[in-house]
Length: 136
Image (cartoon, rainbow, N blue to C red; front, side, top):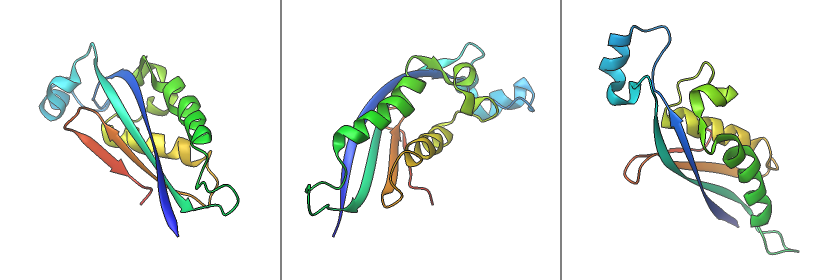
């Protein structure tokens, strides 16, 4: 029997959407206000969904305390109050769109989870704009 355990987290980060290989005009046309050279910020909300079998001994799929620690070290400590373009190595050459941020978060958390678990990331950039990624 597969059950999903979820953990919510929050981080604040600044970013700029642009491609180094495009002109300012093309970046402006594609990314609009999100191309602000002085960056802009979001209050990101993250939901990490871990799916697996219930352990007969503990009754847990995963101890939420472990999931909390993984999210803290891999996401909150790495991204909170950071400029994603300048301070986070994963975005040195990767445009920090919500889609790319979700994939990076997925990869960082997945690497710390037992391979028996399925993972899905839901990342809210705003209360109305969010992306979902499950490794597929």
